[in-house]
Each structure stands twice: as structure tokens, then as C-alpha cells.
Image 1: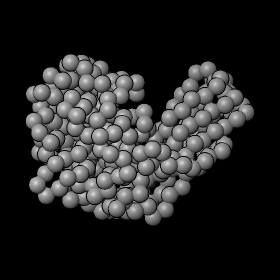
Image 2 (image 1 turned 45 degrees about the vertical axis):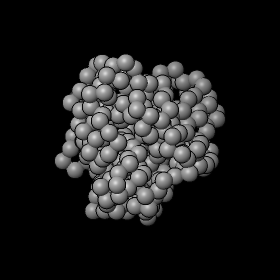
Image 3 (image 1 turned 135 degrees about the vertical axis):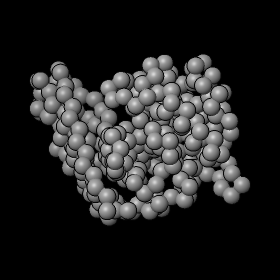
Length: 265
């Protein structure tokens, strides 16, 4: 499938900040099933490319001097081929055990341990899809119900959340069993769904008779990743895989506008 994507992020301020730094994970990952036909990142300021510890292609954006807004665009065309049963054949340079370590957002509280005990019964694809289905039943999709700082335990207690919360709860459940699982950020062709085109899902390590490695699961839709997805970054949680994340000096109140246009053909 050919995915044409345009992603614009605009920060505006009531008074101009004097310094901004943003870490961008807006370049599609180099993976066997994902071929970047063309891609461009545009932003004012200085933008330096680097590869992070998880193998994501990143850019560090810095703006010095007074500025009224920060505008970041990423756009291009990506060719994606279907994954067989959600299986990724890149094992990566890191041990999968790196992704068994809880973070602040994925700490397995007692409520999560109890939930995992009821709904996670093995380390095969079917077991993980059953967990995803249980998470969707326990945490209804509701935009604005949580913040980017909300934890997996917060979402489970509230019973509402978004794709980020579904992913964090899945990771936290896996951490109770020391099963490797990682956060994925990217885009999804919306098709006839109502969820946002920017998306978060998970990779989890399976051990099956004919395959040992990562499979990719969209927890929010309780399905395996297919060719409707463009992968930007992987990490331990949102904070290590967010498309745009940074800080500033000055600038008082901030407004954020994000627009994503995506078509498939």
C-alpha cells in the first residue's frame, strides 16, 4: 500500500519564548516492510539529524531568539507491504530484555497485576490479542479523558483513554510477567474508523513453534498491524517515542494545533 502523509504541528504563545528545543521522531523507520519513497521535514531554526538508542531516525530542532510560533511539518510517501500475522523480521540491535523494564508511565501497579493475571495467559499471538481485547473492554476510547502524563494505572482506574493509554496498559501488563513489549508511534490510515490518524500501538515478543521475535499489535483496534500503518518510532513508552517532544524558555501560555492528512492507494 502507498501511504501519502502530511503532518503539521504548530505551537503558538501569548508572549514570545527566547529559546525552544524539540526532539522530533517524524521520519519513518527503516524496516524491511516499509520503504520511504520520499520524505521531508520542515521547520524554522536549526535541525540536526541523529539516530537514538532504539534505532529511530530523529532530529533535534533548536530555535534561539524571540519567536511567536514553532511550526513543524513532515510529509511524504511511504510504501508499506503487509506483515505476515503481524510479524516483524528485524530483531534489532538491542536485547528484547531492554523492553521488560517499567517506566513511570508503565509501572505495573497492583491493579494492573490483577488485571494481567486475569487476561494474560501466555506469550503467543492469540494470548496477546486476547489481552488487547480485554484492555479495550476495560478502557473505553475517549478523546480528552487523559493527559500525555497519565499512567497506565490512571487509565485503568478511570476506565477511559486513548491509544496511548491502551498501549501503556498493554506494556504494563507484559511487565508483570517480564515479557518484552515496546511502544510504537506512527500513523494509521483512518479508513472508516473514528480514531485519530496519528496513532500508538505496541510490539511484543512472542515465542511460537515457527517464530520467535516481535509481532505488532494495535491494541486500540484489537488487531495485528497490517499495511495501513506507517511506523515512526519505537521506545519504552510515549516519552521515548513521541513524534514531537521538547521544552522552551519563556513564552507564557501555549496553544498546540496538530493536523494530519493521510491517504492510501
